Image (cartoon, rainbow, N blue to C red; front, side, top):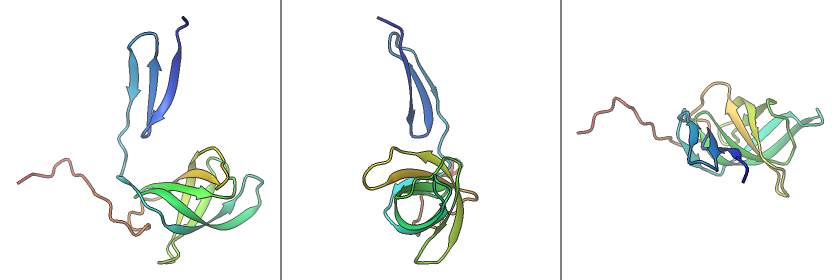
Length: 136
């Protein structure tokens, strides 16, 4: 049996597992902010994979103070810049594409990161854990 090593991603952490021995290498980096499953319609605009400008209404799957996961109909490139608009508040946020899922019938899952944290953009209150918080 050959020595196989696979690599995967678990909640943002790179994980290498050697299947022939019980060794695991985990380089976990904690998330910058809590994530929550939250479906909200937003308008996304930018350049598609074919470099043509697009504007579409899409839905979020997961959101955080630092970005989120969208379901886009247009195919975009990793590293592409997008502008998201929250239709309820008309607030705009610039973001960068940092993850591309496989295209499916409904669209493509696209992970985005805000250029500056925007915890109020989604209209969701995120729990913050303070390591120095005291428990009474």
